[in-house]
Amino acid sequence: MAQFQEAIQTNTLPLPPAVTPRGVAATELRPWGSFTVLEEGRGYKIKRIEVKPGHRLSLQMHHHRSEHWIVVCGTAKVVCGEEEIFLSNNQSTYVPQCTAHRLENPGVIPLVLIEVQNGEYLGEDDIIRYQDDYARVEDKNQ
Image (cartoon, rainbow, N blue to C red; front, side, top):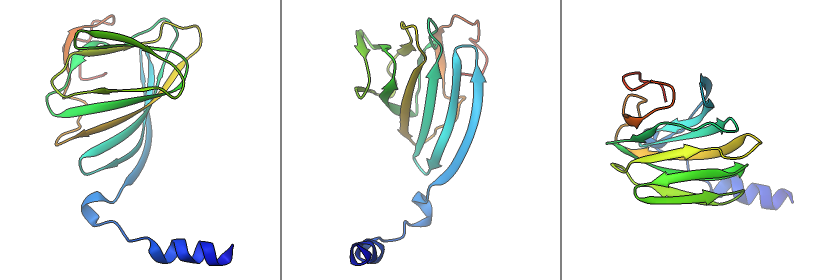
């Protein structure tokens, strides 16, 4: 076992500073639930998103990022472009940049998913809202 651990340690290369991850773990509350930034680095951000039962995020679009969503717990109703799908535990989907999308929890338990964002700019102000249940059209909150 010690040889195995030693081999792992000697075969790992340090990441260049441009892609060195920063653990953030900052939770932000929203009317629909919350999100926690787990890690962020150049060109990517990883979030844990929790959506309350019966709630949904705005129908929105991002100019500068794409998103991958992986369901950890619960059921997700996803609108992506013209497509509408349902996802459950261990299922995932991809949201291309410049595509209208929406995430909803149609279930009775909290929906938990991991979101991986990729793009040149990952700020929360890169959101164009088309519809919002919480009247946040001009607000920068998700």
